[in-house]
Length: 266
Image 1 (cartoon, rainbow, N blue to C red):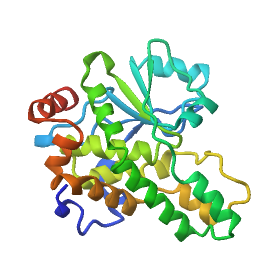
Image 2 (tube, one colour):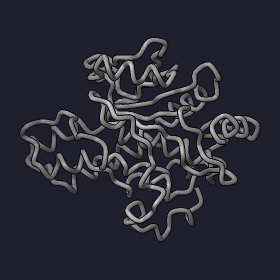
Image 3 (tube, one colour):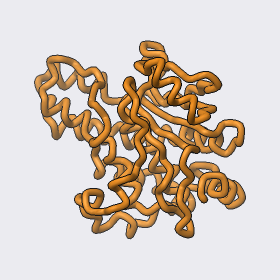
Image 4 (cartoon, rainbow, N blue to C red):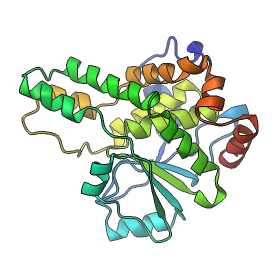
């Protein structure tokens, strides 16, 4: 990713853009508060991402029967679960008829470290944010092959419409959305606007240790644009350029990238 796409970014962007008053499009559900359509963002050659093709979400284990009816109406075909193995086993997803589950586990990195901080009385907002930054860097580098698998699945016609999610729909899901939108040529401002929309939608109902200081809890539950920016820069670095990340990191060669954009963009 070219550095110029991120330099000089202003934190108030998404509050001022009229487009972001209607994007992203939330699917109001009882059992998930951060399930939304990725459609509408403008990408390559000004073409908009199609609605009803890609969705991102928080965990799906609390979906009600009414929620399942609403999701079935989207024609959802594939649900990619980015939660770690134990997370997914502890809270199995509820899926609408016709949707197939595909586990793409990315193990969370902050839980054990947070417990250590709590034991040492050192769980400040700054230290918790630092640990979250370590997790983001891991997701963007060591776990990049998982996002490559996600792109492979999106390219398969029978897999769409496709939804991907983690627990909060914020960190692992947020990075996945950022990588996909980057490949589609979406501006960095729009990518960040999509990322921080979690702060508006998510009910912040992810369980955290009762003894954790509120400032540490807030750090875990908030979005962190600076961490996402650093993670994307780390993802680009081994490949030398945004194009290299897309082609060699995500496996979207020119032909595959053209197909990727062809099926997702109007």
